[in-house]
Image (tube, rainbow, N blue to C red; front, side, top):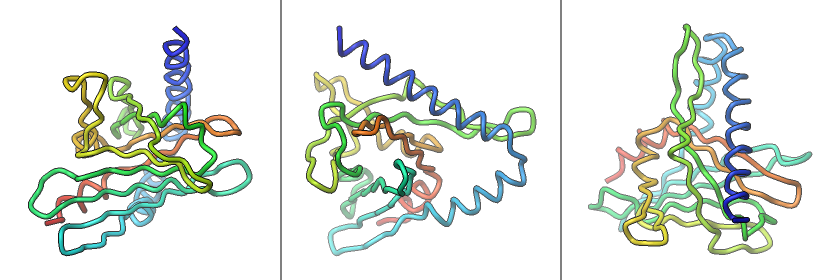
Length: 196
């Protein structure tokens, strides 16, 4: 019962955070949004390191954490000759509350009444536990792009969602409360297709 209440709390915090951003987008002019998108294209270009057996993609996403800037780090490892990633890794700064794990939800960019906005897909909300926490980072790993639920049949294809949606929103808890980070996925889609 406590887990269900906590999950509902997470959902409402997430939905409120996303709706606040959506409202902010809706109030901005199309020219301003285009300038932001161009800037984001440069900021959210993944670093790619090709190795003999495949490739690694890295992205450090800055976000405001209290009075300082912190980083969420995404890493995607892909072996040559495969379509799916071997692993997707998400690292957040310590001290994250390991027992709460990492929550995420996907969204699409939409145009309404001539203005751009973000439309979250609440059905895409999911969570994963941290596999490791040290003094610097807490890490969550998604093997083969899938999160396996309590049964093997209950699995979420996170990799498919990375290719389907325009943004992924991450949320986790630390000693100061909740932290939420939005990551545009347009660069990921383009760069991943270019890997061997």
